[in-house]
Length: 125
Image 1 (cartoon, rainbow, N blue to C red):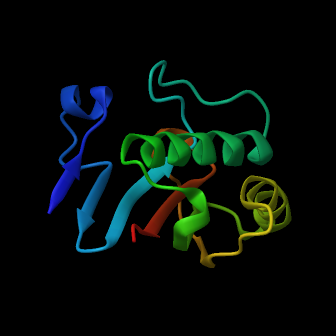
Image 2 (cartoon, one colour; image 1 turned 45 degrees about the vertical axis):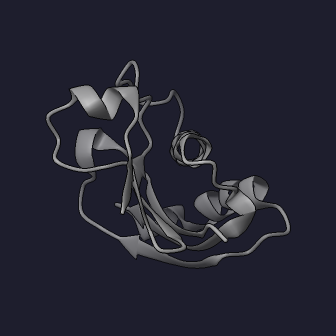
């Protein structure tokens, strides 16, 4: 296995890796809708939260030299299923023509008050 750590994940006490490569699959841990440097939530609502979570996902992809076009599957967590349409709109803007498999999971409150968390599996070859 190859472990990918960000500068922030190296210094935080949370026991996880932002991404782990095993075989030909990169497993990207859930990316919350919070700025990882300032630890502030985005201004606005679920659209801005979705954009931030996708920005965080892209940062981990960049770190591991992965491409969003090779994402096989995403899991999107949100505390309110009524956010579905807005999340889907921003998700579609991010992915364009690429349509990975996906599940949207309604949850209870997410950490830090985030409205979106996205995890992914990526084909590396």
